Each structure stands twice: as structure tokens, then as C-alpha cells.
Length: 196
Image 1: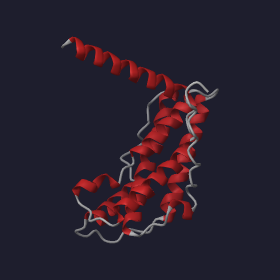
Image 2: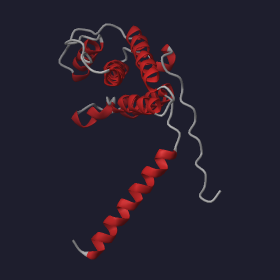
Image 3: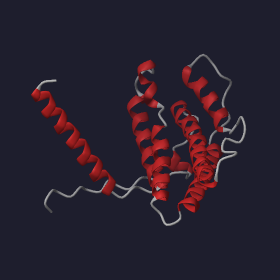
Image 4: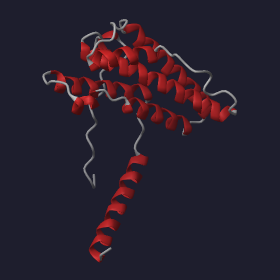
């Protein structure tokens, strides 16, 4: 590796380190606020895709990685709290409740057809109905079982949000804000200028 490449590589590592340090100092959003922002992002993606033909390149229209991120942020907030286990149990409960609200607002799927969106909605809806192979967290100690319960609640929530996303695309589901399981996210806070 040449000297210039080493300098550039070192600069990139330093910048990534600074970005990570700055991020760790930021206040993490609450789980519900994080979900609200994720719902708003999906509604934006839906508007962008609405007037275009759907093809394989647009499959990222349905993406629930943000829901997983919100669950991870929730666990991290719990880890930083005075009572991490109680906090994670409450987080799991909140996710179960939200899952129930979403599923209550979704219609039964039509019979699967040849179209990808209809087949995906049918599959996601059934997955979100919580068909399980068994107790996923059985046999773990209290700390691990508590984390596992919050994690499994997030996975079930992801299935419900995926079903909602595809249902929105198909015109079967109403906006989350309309049905009441999400609120409009607050406007982004302006960032302070350096040195102020």
C-alpha cells in the first residue's frame, strides 16, 4: 500500500471514529418516536414508487430494517437506564401492543395471485399472525431471556410492519397515522453550527 493510500485510509478511520463518538453523545430517540419516523419514511417511499411500474429493482420499497433499528435503539436505551431488565420487559410489551394495533387495522389477505405484492402480503400477514415453532427464549437465564423476549417481540413487529407496508402499496391498508398506531414524527431539530 502506498504512502498516500495509508494517509487517506488513516484519515477515513479517524473520521469514522469521530462520527461514532459524536453519535454516542446524541440522545437516542424513544422507541415510539423512532417508529413514527420509520412510518413517515415509508409513506415517502410509497409516494416515490406510486407512479412507477414495480420491478425487481424496486423490491426495497418494502424494508423493515428500520423497525429492527428502532428495537435495537430501545434495548440500548434500556441498557443505559437505571433498571435495564424492567425497561426491556416494558419494551417487549410495547412492541406486542403495537403489533396488535397494526394487525387489527389490516384486512385479511385476498387469495394469493401471480402478482408479487399480493403474494408477499399474503405471506407477511400470516407470518405476522405469530405462528411459532415454539418458545424461542426457553432455557435462557433471566438477562438473556429478557433480551430475547424484547428481540422476539421486535421480529414479530417487523412482520406486522411488512404486512402493513405491502398492504399500503396494494391500497388495502390505511396510513398508520389515520388508524392511530403511529403519530407524525416531530420536525428534525436544526443542528448547531460548529463553535456556537
